[in-house]
Length: 80
Image 1 (spheres, one colour):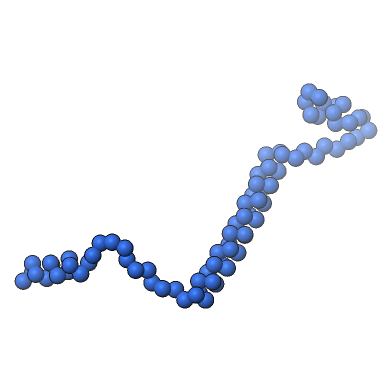
Image 2: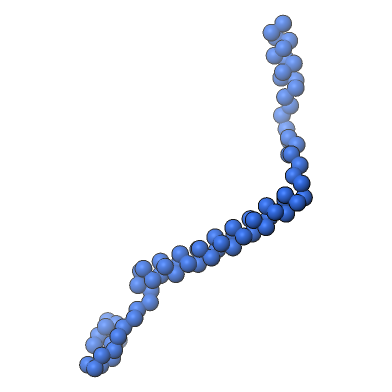
C-alpha cells in the first residue's frame, strides 16, 4: 500500500522542462520599462562613482599662482 502510493507520487513528478507561468503583455511592458530606468540610473551612478574616485585619488590638481612665479617654476609638479 505504501509502496503503491510512493510509486504513484514518483510517476506524477516528471523531470524535464517545466512550464513557466504566463505573464500578461501589459505587465511585461511595465517591467521592461522599469528595468531600463534602473539600468540608466545604475549607469549614471557608475559614471559619478568613477569621477569621485578620480577626484579622491587626486586625478585633477588645482594649483594657484602667486606673485613668486608659476607652479612649474616653484617645482610644484616635480621634474618639469
